[in-house]
Image 1 (cartoon, rainbow, N blue to C red):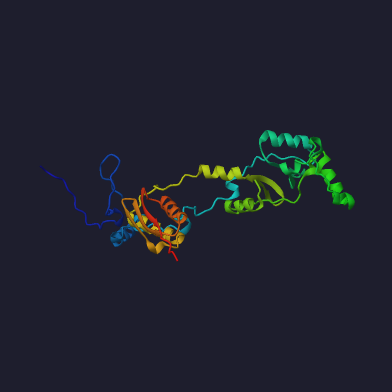
Image 2 (cartoon, rainbow, N blue to C red):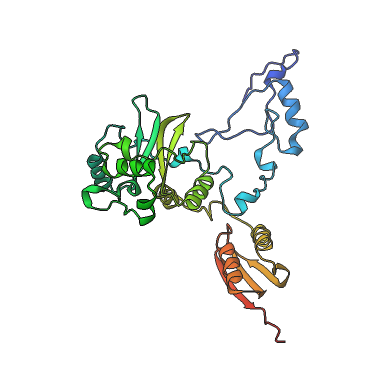
Length: 306
């Protein structure tokens, strides 16, 4: 068989050099990619580093960033804010809204308070159930003590009369109110609600009402939360380190506790000071990513008898 061939003395163009690694084409054949000599040289020099032909190292060569303390404790690295959970379609009233209509809104919508806004959208005050329980219509006016009858306070008497007999929102509203901002974290809001014993906070941008955040909004955020305990595989060593850090930060008896992990099964043994401490350690284990089962061998530390 005759084979026709032609020999050339021209130098090979560097653009015809092939890369070291050729990826298979979709049809199963080998795909040939032409690379300039600069990329070819970088590929050869970085081959031992696992780089691709463009000179960039593969992401697999870099260890994953270690989770920070907030992630290890089961909290998001970016805490949720008021803007994430607040109700933006707010039910509000004006200063001229009749008290009877406000009472109907609270009863019909099953809410405990309603903000009062001016014509420019600025928050003026709030009317809550507390502002409406002392009313002449239902005979619940505040009884005056004998002390006030002997030494009457004209200003206080007049103010009480307006609140119990006034027919508009401006007569019964509370002007000194606690508000929230969109950038506040839910932890800040929970602190305020708990300390002030409030059920909801108007959310303002400057002085303009933009939303409202309530306890039920926090509960809804909790209901939407789904812990990603098994989003990615965890080695036993990583699980053990994470769990030990949690226990060390939580328990004063951590030096008396021994933990081992095998195939995601955590064995926890040792002495604790109280039942509450024991329960906290077990809850910490339940929240540690990768833990699939827990063997509880914790016992209460014996008390010395004097």
